[in-house]
Length: 361
Image (spheres, rainbow, N blue to C red):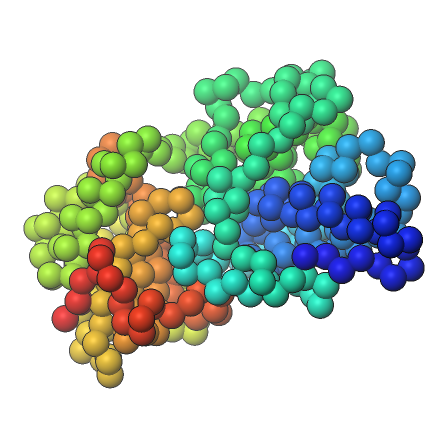
């Protein structure tokens, strides 16, 4: 919750703060998809509030559009400055995972953010509807929109598989793609964010769209099938069943592990079902051998897709997102960097959880 500025009349300040709070979930959903960091997304949203306080809000025609432009500009600057650091990152860089039910409830950002506001809330995955305003966001604007078949749903856009693809885009391309193809903003607004002409903004989105197509990120639309595959994968992984794992993996499956140089992890992606299965069984077995407390694997939802959470006692060791396509697991993205797991709570009840959890011994 925003604390109204003491310098503004109480009534107007409170109304402005309430209006801003109404847009917070949308702004955080945009910022997280651009940055892949919960803390950085929250910082961008908080800075947008500070900038809103410094302008005459009565002159803003569309508050959501104005705030989205501000947040997107902040994120674009952050992406540009972070590009060099990510290129020097130890091993694959993956976003901070959003794990349903494991958010710690603490918000990063500043003293004026309510500490009770959830960080990894459902709106970050599902997003919020973008209303049609002035013929722009949320509909077919004067500069047109992508073919509906090219649209990326809000849930798809936050999956780790898609965010890995977005990491390969330039900061401006990523911004144009997220704002246009995911949140339906028009190219005039995107031009305002990127500092380019609307025609150039269109080209940014087009290049990004081609790149996403070339990477062929496929999504299985059947949640029940995804859940069955994840359950069978969990049982095979926990039981050391190589044949069981291979039955759930796409022949061209890939696994990425993000340890950030802070924990042991493969520094390059592992490709091929057999290599992936043996790699996973190896790290699970090694974790069991080295563990001081009992280990367990728990089924969770990671960025809107099925996944696993690995525990030693109540301590979260890693989170794995399972990307299912055509009934098989095509990608496994494992976040083991402890700095990217700090926002997630320990296992419920001080153990590996209840139903959907199995011992990894």
